[in-house]
Amino acid sequence: MTKLKIGNINDVVNGEMIQSTINNKNYLIAKIDDEIYVTSDMCTHEDAELTMGCLSGKKVKCPLHGSYFDLITGEAQNEPAEEPITVYEIKIKNGQIFIDD
Ligand code: FES
Image (cartoon, rainbow, N blue to C red; front, side):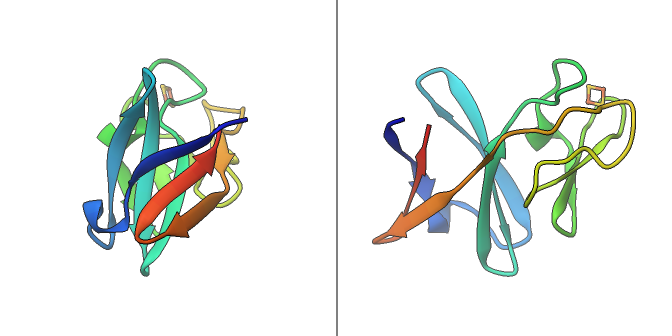
């Protein structure tokens, strides 16, 4: 695993999410109640970027078929997706967001 800097906490507005692309890999960074959450940015059902969907509390809704994923556990909340998305543990240093990946 490598420490990756994937963004700055000020890149994301509270209540919104952005996509960060590092080494050709897309990550979802969400800020909810001033907490940062980082997950993979690909639905586990088909190829759909979750950052094209919408946030609902601490869940993200897939734009294609509407599965919700919990941003804390990664679990799919409803079909058709069944597999969880990857959730990354984050470290924040001087406003920069780091993950191990
Ligand atoms: S592609 Fe996300 S639920 Fe189908």
